[in-house]
Length: 350
Ligand code: SF4
Ligand code: SF4
Image (cartoon, rainbow, N blue to C red; front, side):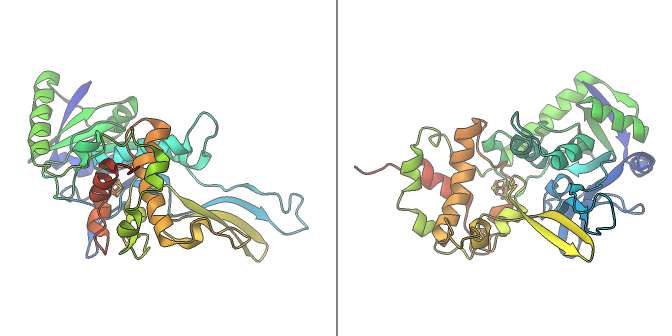
């Protein structure tokens, strides 16, 4: 473990220095709120942001991503042969990522990087990325991250964790990737490890005290999957949903996508786009049959996946890091905490 002090006066100059080798991403605030996006050379990350509307997931899993291309010009020797798109995976750093969004990347990794298969696009982007987190000193009212094994100063998935201490940042360097990034920035003022850790512990405790919201999941593991699937409450939960998909797009742990082909003149491309289990088109088969043609089936799928299937499959908690974005953004106030309570307390009547 290694702590570094970064005077805020040196911050912008340091990260600018890192631009020689790193592509930078970070929070950018405009009239529509804050988003984590690529930082143009003259843009510094907004390190005073509170919450971002969208998470950092698009840095590793772009909303639209070309996977394969083929040249359809028959005069070319390898025409119609699909080849991996020439995407670049130069080193990149996400500055100011919130701890729950970094932990979410680890949950998404369970899907994209397994013993049986490896999504090369996501994995290559992941390997190229350094995560520089920013601890949350004032959690928002929708934050329930402490009840899902995360929290405002959670280190899981991060390479560096920063604590904002007014005129300087205290940086906890967690991995060799984090160390390499600090070197690229020229941040090398060592701080005392013991004192710094004690300060981090205090900040963490203070921040956690301000999280008053939680999600109830303790009995979910023991519930029978089919009983939950057939439970009578799904109609009530789904009633108000307008299937807008907002909850899935803002969620840092949602990973569904759709693959499409497109031909422009002699160039063919296969690309993927974010998709949502809330859309009826997502599961419609080429035959026209749709196993989730009804709204209630789609709403049930979203919550069963997050709160039961994922839990049963990976045994690593629920597929949620408690960021609260879906709760805050849902236009009809469907709240995953209430759904979890309903599922958690459900008892099948004989
Ligand atoms: S944001 Fe709300 S209304 Fe929209 S799909 Fe999700 S649950 Fe339904
Ligand atoms: S389900 Fe909601 S609260 Fe949980 S990680 Fe996704 S957006 Fe955040």
